[in-house]
Image (tube, rainbow, N blue to C red; front, side, top):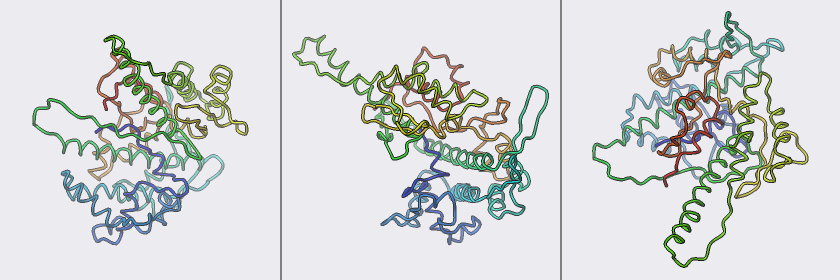
Amino acid sequence: MRTYLLEKSRVVFQADEERNYHIFYQLCASANLPEFKNLRLSSANDFLYTRQGRSPVIEGVDDAKELRTTRHAFTLLGINDSYQIGLFQVLAAILHLGNVEIKDRDSDSSLIAPNNRHLTAFCELVGVTYQDMSHWLCHRKLKTATETYIKPLPRLQATNARDALSKHIYAKLFSWIVEHVNKALVTNVKQHSFIGVLDIYGFETFEINSFEQFCINYANEKLQQQFNMHVFKLEQEEYMKEQIPWTLIDFYDNQPCINLIEAKMGILDLLDEECKMPKGSDDSWAQKLYNTHLKTCSLFEKPRMSNRAFIIQHFADKVEYQCEGFLEKNKDTVNEEQINVLKASKFNLLVELFQDEQKATSPTGQVPGTGGRTRLSIKPDKGRDKSSKEHKKTVGCQVVINAPYRVII
């Protein structure tokens, strides 16, 4: 199994009537189990990361029973009880981290009160020191050619850094599970052929559409193009070649929409460019989009009542995307010093999750996040240089790199 897009933003935020990932509610519903006593869990309504959607309970779903099913599935796949408790320990730690309140020290710095009970629980669950974690949640390290600075973070930036860490830990845990499931499914029988199943989100359009919907809809544009190519274009060319009587079917070519997204000076290209700017912002990126595409591309529109959104005419529907958060999600970075604290943990599973963490080379003191993306297929574009791929850090770059890979359905 390969992951394409893990919707990490759901870990720290849910819209009305949405839930976080089910496992969090399963754990909270099972908080009274003796083996979960050390997790210090309670109702899902007690945790920021599970109450924002205001729908902690799904009618007809017994979360405690679902956890028993989850644990049974883990056991069948060779993940033993010890590892399972470790996984739940990490998940509980994420919930506690979300409840860590960061306060203003002044306009340019922030602090966490001493002996914050949720940070204490987090640190004990993941085996790190309270002092180190509380310090690096409110500070970051900046490196220049000659010096290193410790910079305090304003409350909002510190809160965003806390949430970025929560998403990063969850993504590492998710990848660990996928890796171990793949190991369990390995067979020594010689493989002569295979059936590939592509399970991906359908086309998405919600009341508020952000970076996740943009990536999902871009993937669906590529899948639609693949469908058109093989079902219509190539098949009809084969009929004509073999002189089979056939009435040509006219089909919609969505290449212009794909060009709008992935071509030079396209939406993703301008997004990556803005991410490199010292004072790049969602607002200035939006203005670049308007200046570049409004007069040149009929598939791109600006909403009448907003200067922070754009509309794309996809093959399935028009979708309005809100620009807020695009840059941060595209960078997908997390504070390097926070990762170093976790890598020094006394908790073996956590160390295992982060053992392959790349070291940052950026002077901002941040490391690339685990964007949860891998190629959609197994046939690479030979024209692309491998080394150029390895140095791409933004999620947007990874999306474009993945685009030439052939999808096997």
